[in-house]
Length: 165
Image (cartoon, rainbow, N blue to C red; front, top):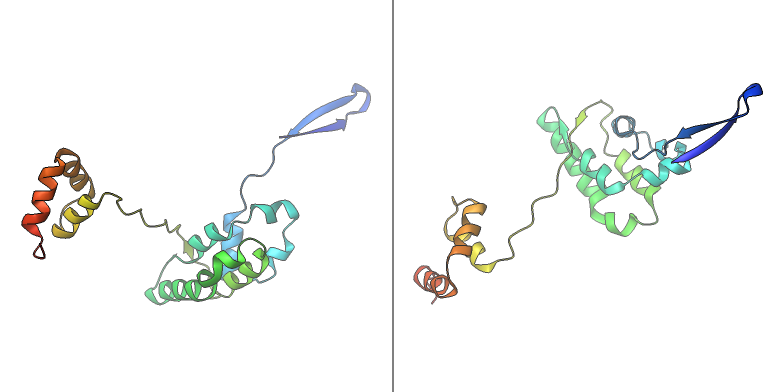
């Protein structure tokens, strides 16, 4: 939080509290992508440039609501131009990443929904075996069954259900 002093006539100095910006204007950023505005990032002030997170922006840019053609267009363009070398460029070349994202635009405004990263796979081997053998089983059920069964019972299950053993 910043505290600014302002001279208020004969009453003296008045403290004005100004809060730091925490987020970049998402609507303006996505609109700039849709318009293919490659100079948008260069026009940002230094504080806003610090707030620009290419990974988060890429997650938004790659997903649009609308025709299937445009959904595929944004996804494929984002994968081809931005995602391919994202981790190499993200540290020191945010401006270049922005220009690559701007290339994905289709000159029409779309609603961009955040595309969450896929959930992590289970680390328990037996839970993964249960899920492989029972494709309709839910993850929670497999984890519960895995925690209930003893090591001996798990070994017996694998022995009974694995044709290679």
